Structure formats: C-alpha cells, structure tokens
Amino acid sequence: MKEQLKELAIELYEIDAVKFGDFVTKVGLKTPVYVDLRVIISYPKILKKISKTLWGLAEDDKVVQICGVPYTALPIASVISAESDIPMVIRRKEAKAYGTKKLIEGSFKQGDTCVIIEDVVTSGSSILETVRDLKNEGLKVTEALVIMDREQGGRKNIENSGIKMQSLYTLTQLMGYLLEAKKVTAETVERVTEYLKESRAPVKTFEDESAPNRLKLDFAERSKVAKNPLAAKLLNLMSQKETTLCLAADLTSADEIIDLTERAGPHIAVLKIHVDIIEDFDQTFIQRLKHLSSKHKFFIMEDRKFGDIGNTVSLQYGKGVYKIAEWADLITAHPVPGPGLLDGLKKAQKHVSEDRGVFLITEMSSKGALTGENYVKECLALSKDSDIVTGHVCQSNVFSDPGLIQLTPGVKLAKTSDNLGQQYNTPEAVVNAGADLAVVGRGITESLDKLSSILKYKNQLWAAYKNRISS
Ligand code: S5P
Image: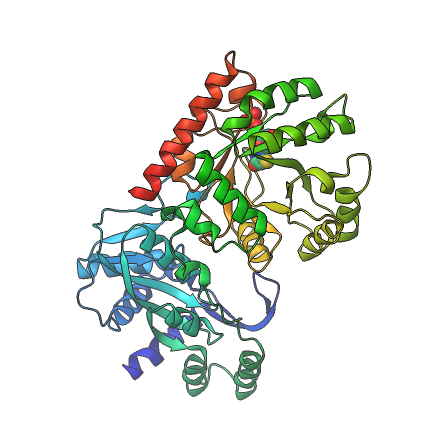
C-alpha cells in the first residue's frame, strides 16, 4: 500500500494536482500548498487508480449507496460505484435556487447506509452538509473516504459527528512521499509544516447538524430553544393561533392598510409593511396599527432591509421620521455589512423596553438574486450566537436550528412570476422547502375577495405545516 501511495503521490504532483508556492484560498487565506484534484478527470488512468486505492480503505461492508461530495469527488465516486456495483446518489448543490427541487438524486430506501467520497477535507463542512442532507432524506452515513486530509481540523469535526473518516493521505504524509522522491525540498516541507501549525480550521461544534430536525418539530417545542425572545413569542403565537401567514400589505395609503389589517388581523401571525411607500404616513397610522396588533394578536414587521454600517443602521432604526425601533416588533436586514450591522441594530434596541427581532435576508426570491451558497453560509454564521436574530428570510431549508424561523416570500396559489423578477411558489411547496412563516402580498392585496384569499392561504399553509411535522 505504501509503495502504491508513494507512486500515486508522485503522479498527482506531476499532473499539478498538488502545487507549492504562494496561493490564496477561497476564503482569502494565504497558503503555500494548493491541492486541486479536479485535474484528474483529464487522466483516466490516475482517476481509476486513485478510485481503486480509495475504495480499498472502506471498512463498512454493508454499504448500499455511495455519495460523492460535489463536484471534484463525483467522478471518483462514479468510478467506485461502477467498479463495485454499488449504486450512487448525488447531493445537488444548487437545489437551493428554488427550494423545491429534490436535494438528493438517485433511488434509495429509508435506512440505506451510505459512504461519502470526498477529495480534500479542510474544515469538514462540505462533508457535514452532505451528511445532514442525506440524513434528512433518511439515509445513514457511517463512513467518509477522503483522498487528502489537510490536517486543519476537519477530521475532528467529522468524527465529532459520529462519522468515521479514512484518508489516503494527510498533507504531512504526502509531503513525506514527495520529499523522498525528491520532488520537493526540505525547505518546502518546512514551510508547509509551519503553515499547518498556524492555520487550523476552527473546530466546529455543528450544533446545527446534530440538532433535532427543525422541519419535524412543532412550533411550541421550538419556542423553548429560541435564543431571541421574539422568536419564542412568535413560534408560540403561530402555534396557538394556528397560522403561519405573514401578510405583506404593500399598499401606499394608510387607510387601505388599516382596512386590510382589520380584516386580516385574526388570521395572520405577522403584518409586514414597507413604511417608506406610505404616502400619507404619520404617527397616528402607527397608533392604529399597534391597536390592531394587540387586539388581534399579530406582530408588526417593518421590511426596511437595513444594510449599512452599524452606526448608520442604528440611526436609521431608532431615529428619523419613522422611529422604527419604537413600533416594529420585527425588522429585516441585509447582513452584507457583517457583524457591525447587528451591533448597530442592538444599540438602537437598548432604548426600547419591548422584545424586538431581526430577520436576516439570506436568500432572495427574485430571479438572478446574488445570494449564492457562500453568502448563505456567511449569513447563517452571523445568526449563530446572536440573541437578536429571529430567523432568516430564505427560499429553502438552509439551516437546522429549531430556534430560528424561516420566513419565505414569493408565495402564490400557483407557481408563477411577475414581470419584475419576482418568482412565486405554492404554499405547499414553500412549506416543504422549510418555510415556517410564508409572506403573501399581491396574492391577497390584488384579489377581489380579500378575506377569502386570506383564509385560503392561511388554511393551505397550516395544512402543509401539519403535514410536514407529522409525515
Ligand atoms: O426575497 C425576498 C424578500 C422579501 S422581504 N422577496 C420578497 O418578495 N420580499 C418581500 O416580500 C417584498 O419586499 C414584498 O414586500 C413581499 C412579496 O410581495 P408579493 O406581492 O410578491 O407577494
């Protein structure tokens, strides 16, 4: 085996799958070693050899499915699957775009055991995300076979989640083989060793992945684990009032909003407005709204989508004509400025005695939205330890923390779009894609019989939620 690994290490070096120099990683960190196994698809003999050697590490002989982590490991997993005659499943990376597509492709049964194939492990997060999605679909994952362990904390993270990880090489072993074959100098080995000492990936607790499945828990149970007090209240309210409807009253006249809210109040969990589109705004409008919110028990959300540096958002939230912090139970914010945004919002909340919450805009419903997978990850990281984040505005099940709420806009009775990029999915589809609260705007405001539309959305959403937690 050792000779085989040494030979393979040299071949990988010669096809530029391992390079030494000054590189910058995806997340902007400097590294003296770059491992890019994508190139092996151009060398079928090496692809075959590496796949065979990797499969030789497998211990679990009851495995009935193979899953490659997209994308580099997919050809390796395919070769292993074809050679071993064990079927393969694929976890889609881009299913999140519309939230309703299948996450796992391939045919499998509940309880099937599955081995994961991965090319390089750094923090282990790609494997853990794959494991989470496979588990959500009922597959059991016991083992991960990896070509290269960069020794930066990934193994620990993976093993902490109960997955046995086997690798063909650690970076140190690979360096040893290359030094022996005189492909690298002792100085390069030393540089890499130093780098490894300094750049351990943070140990992830992966609470999210090991937490009970958010989609299967009922709101009352989830309220007990919410860090944000308003999230706890909202989950309880949805449970008691049996509604997950958030009405987007995107109307420009104060009277029209009040009129609609009077009718909708008993059936909604949240009334969402855009205060800056109201042409006759004054503080009496707010008083009337507050009166209705305490009479009919719903929360008020100002969909301001704050997105500036901490100091500016603090002023925008607490001051100015609208004094949003004084009356909006909930607000929305674009997390693009980073943690300072939350600090700024929190600062403005200090002057208010009631509970307040923030929904982070993590994915958008509009066509071509720039909220890609990495951005989503960063947004989720931001909410992890915050007590002011109520949940995420997103289109799909991107987080598992049962204490956070998924708010999904872009909802209509039929799957359609408008002519300005808005995309709609049905109430049932969005709930199955993880929506806890669903935002309906024009589906209600433009209907002739508003009350009957409100009830239709409310009932369809609630039925889909009950179905989700019981199935
Ligand atoms: O991604 C998003 C986020 C939000 S908050 N897509 C959205 O459409 N929204 C808001 O939801 C939008 O500002 C509007 O108020 C509402 C959707 O309205 P509708 O009329 O298209 O249902």
